[in-house]
Image 1: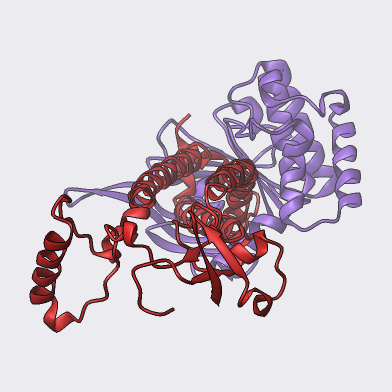
Image 2: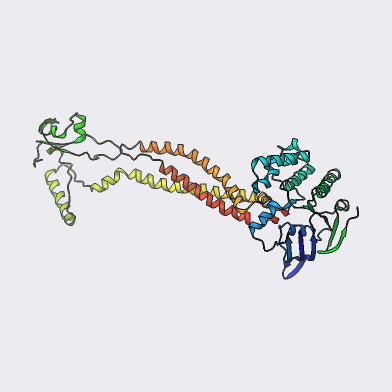
Length: 227
Length: 247
């Protein structure tokens, strides 16, 4: 599903290149649940951002479902966002001026989903996450864990092929973190959604089926998880 | 009318006939009138002309010779002979009316004087209106810039959710256009009352049509759309990750 070849990202400062990522070559198949781990500053988030088209690599190839992402026009990228990629941010990044329901509805509006179906999908996912009572609250009225759930609901409601999650439990207490990791595992195993998460926590990484370790911008390790 | 220095006959205007309830101008011809002690027949009827400024209604007018009023004389001058003629007029006047002081005014200047206030007011009004409009637009531009900056994070999030640049520009435009529409609705009645009152100071005035209001709305909306589109397009094109990176 995803092919990376020799991905590089550097910043040039007064002629000196500092590499964030180098020689990153890997592939991710549909249905995998991959955790990207490594020390701080190793380049994990940058890799995820490149996969999510939020940053561009300074060198290398990135193919998503067979298409070259770096050569894509604006139109095609938007199509990927609408139909294939769901992003979960560490900082949640909900829109503060909208209610929970409106936040979850947002990607559906851009997908041009008709009103009745939007309502039904939103109701469905609120129910699944046990958040129906909170649908008219605003993000600042929710706890961190609840906000993250809304962020995940928003990423899911568009039925993407892959979820990219940047330290999704980074700001949460362990109970809420467990709840979310259980959810991810369920989504991956029962619905076959490909999940890519950046995480610091070894515990979280055990929920997946593959661990990619990045150190100093290169892939140090690529192992399967023994359940 | 025949040349004379005594009141022998009258020429009247249409308004005078109207006031006297004479429907047909032809009926007035030959009728005897008496004004200020002198009587004579009406020998002609002239079309109405504005004898006062447009602020006032046309008066009923009777035109006749009268020696006692010769201190007021209207003279048509040949341009080429103007200087010489003016000198001749002055000496003739002084000879005829030694007790009066000679004074002359050019009629076009007098006419201009009627509307001097309006012209000054008109210029002042244009200047101040331009300043006010300019200030409002600065306010609008500032507000647009502020809102676009404030919503940068929201724009970046929406991009990740699949919004196109066009949809983002449309989103920002609609909120501003609403505001401009409401501003127009508030301004229209106020402007209407103001202009109606000013026009009421003129007996002879144009009708206030809908067009100035419509143009004001079109122009304000157009400028808003252009500004918002430019500014929000810039915000939409900005690097998504920069808006989302720093928390």
